[in-house]
Amino acid sequence: MTRTVIVASGTIKDLEAFGVLWKDSVSLVNERLPGTEMYECYIDKDTSRFTMHEEYPGDEAIRRHLEVMTESGVVDRAREVLDFDFVVALGDPLDQKVRSAMGDLGFSFYELHSRAERG
Picture 1 (cartoon, rainbow, N blue to C red):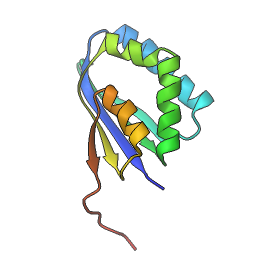
Picture 2: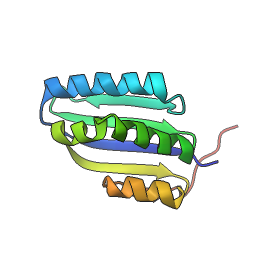
Picture 3: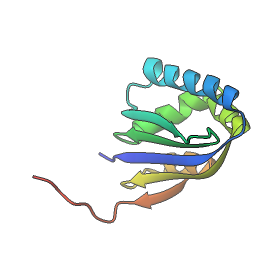
Picture 4: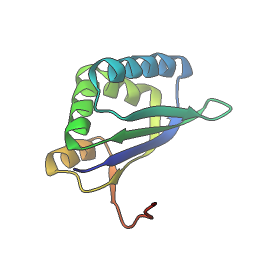
């Protein structure tokens, strides 16, 4: 099974609209996306920049997340209120269908090079 971490960062164009967008996104994750293991956002002190961190256990969870967020309009709304500097998928190789969908959204991909194992 693949495991993928997504990190996105950029500028918040409209803080109020972003607050509504994030609330709606979290509701969708909680209600419809049980495969999303981590979904969090960090904002700098002056509230002009963000970094999002997401974790998924495999391709199916990512596929479902993209589907729900696109169908609900969250992806389009995010493009209106955020300027993404980068969106990166870190992890094991993703299947071609997931890579294609993510690539269309501007993702870059990094596969695992090495890891320190504990215990």
